Amino acid sequence: MEKLLYSCSATITCHGETTNLSGRAKVGNIIVQLSTWPAISAAMKVERDLHMSRGDGETSYASNSRLQEKSILKTRPVLHEAVAASYETSSLSSGGAMVVADLGCSSGPNTLLVVSEVLGAVADRREAELATLMGGQQPPPPAKHVQFFLNDLPGNDFNLVFQSLELFKKLAAAKDKGDSLPPYYVAGLPGSFYTRLFPDHCVHLFHSSYCLMWRSKVPEELARGTVVNEGNMYIWEATPPSVVKLYRKQFQEDFSLFLKLRHNELVANGQMVLAFLGRKNKDVLHGEVSYMWGLLSQALQSLVKEGRVEKEKLDSFNLPFYAPSVDEVRDVIKQSEVFDINHIQLFESNWDPHDDLDDSDDLVLDSVQSGVNVAQSIRAVIEPLIAHHFGENILDDLFKIYARNVAAHLQKVKTKYPVIVLSLKARRVPKYHANDSCYSLLTHGQFM
Image 1 (cartoon, rainbow, N blue to C red):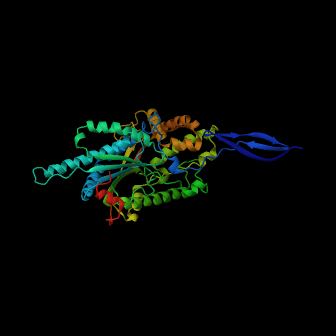
Image 2 (image 1 turned 30 degrees about the vertical axis):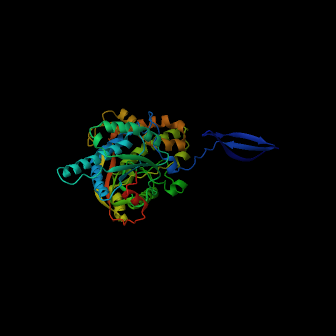
Image 3 (image 1 turned 90 degrees about the vertical axis):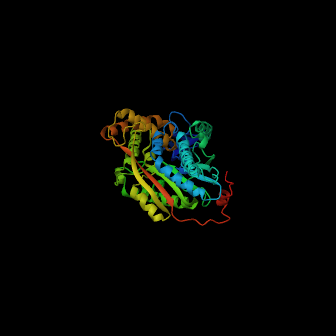
């Protein structure tokens, strides 16, 4: 007599494609039932899986990063002030380069926009320096060299960045300030900014834009499934308080660690300029960024109803993300006791990166087109994580649904991204030692 001994699922992976088998197989007088249990993706690993969409195609980050560009231009005065302060600090040393690190540089035009802004600000300081010496007996000091480190996670499209450098150099040389630009050098630096990136007292200026809302990891209790945020990928209206607490704790730990690491790497009176998505509404369940991810969760829920996405898959998908309030940011800085706040503010930016109406204007001219624009900009950021967890086959339909969801939302209310801008100065003066390798290189002019 045939006996059904056990049932199981079978998954075959070949060339990156995963297939689930179902049915019954007979081995001797034993029948094996193959069920259609969903294949479980490898757990998310932020350092491996988090990166913007690569290349320069239609859905790439390079082609859909206007929102981030607007933020860099908006914070330009704060960056230039920090560059001026860093220039003075670097001039106090007996030689070497002014070291600037852009954390979370990504790829595309914005990466080199930051380089361009810093070089322009350094050129301005150099011109002012020469003007004060004009007519005097003292010879002008040599031009300050600038060493850039472009940092991001290993999955970043560094190849695109390096391929763009030659064109950037030509364009920079063609500008009015081409002759006055300081000598500069650009290097890539892969790695998480939640780890040490430099030796002690190496860097004069850190810059980071649209990055520090990303966490080092998904809170462990969520990653293990101990706590479930059913139907959501981030905090939204129905998120349990226990989940909110986990996300807030992860932010506090990550940001505190980030400040400690950067303080160790900065020279005395070193500067940091940070801009990242935050929260205007103190109620975290109704934060402005929560709607952005909530509407994407709703799009995934639509695919669950169609049977194209397993509900368990959605419930196990949690973003390594947290948009803090200004008070939460200020509290962590205060507790760190290693930085003074030069400047802190929150400004708002329209969801639609192509909506150039004043950010205080609540008019949406074309909600359907704005929905498409928002969906494209978010896809460029989140597509790699979505594809890793759910598979690539749902991407086009998912973001079409998301565009419709955003359009419907914008018909009711024009929502904006709150962006927190910080300028910080390292509080305590580090004590340099003769055997400090990085300091030795800088002061002896060998850091080129």
